[in-house]
Image (tube, rainbow, N blue to C red; front, side, top):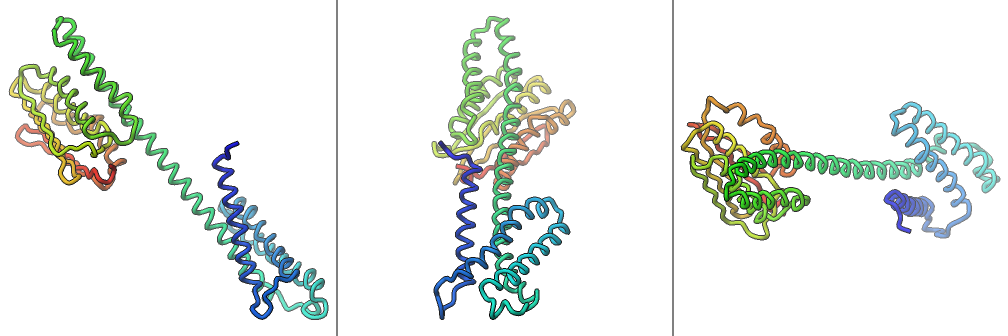
Length: 339
């Protein structure tokens, strides 16, 4: 039967504690003049080990980790005191009745014997727990990040689908011969969105290919009212990228050009890769007075900004400018960090 993750952690911790106790015992018990291990050394160390076990598995989780620091300190000192009492008035009376057992040397001397061992073993347990908690925190952050990315990515699907179903409906009503071609292109892009984009990073070639299909679908919005140019260079099969990053910019370019201008629409999209640095430029004409505010505050644009911040936190630049009725998006991404 396969062990669970928690069981594996417990096994590793037990092995770690056993090895650590052996090392500490040998270090404090070894005498170069008499290198043999004697019975009293084992018994004395067991007394310390019991104190360490109570501290590590009772006081730390129930008091220290719950921020009951004063209670932890008081009880910890009492346990140390009890350990010294057991050593001085029980164990030394058994093993050294005629020497050390005849006179109590004081709690300070006893503390010098107990404190180093207890502090080392308990300190290592504290360090172990901190490392484990840090690993759990990293896993939690990763899970939250993946969930947020999935949510942001899922928002693209209905937005795209509704826009293109409206176009398809219009052409179907007119019995346009373009309808079968539109259905094929729409089917290809949807298949890519729903099935091929489940991975965190996809082939840049495939992503660009589906972007081209998307552009063909979007050209239906402007009909004969302008020109669309789409250029690519430097893309190789080795390049990979987070999927669906470009689609929002292209969608905005078509949407705002088509809605604000009757003719002379111009949309230019360029994707170039040089030395693993991708530069995507998207320019489109628009009428300032009609939709300037909506261009910069759309949900889709905020969505892609969040995705870029999550996936490429320090390896991307997004610059958006508008002047002379030209809206330009320039996205730079370092691909080699996520290939």
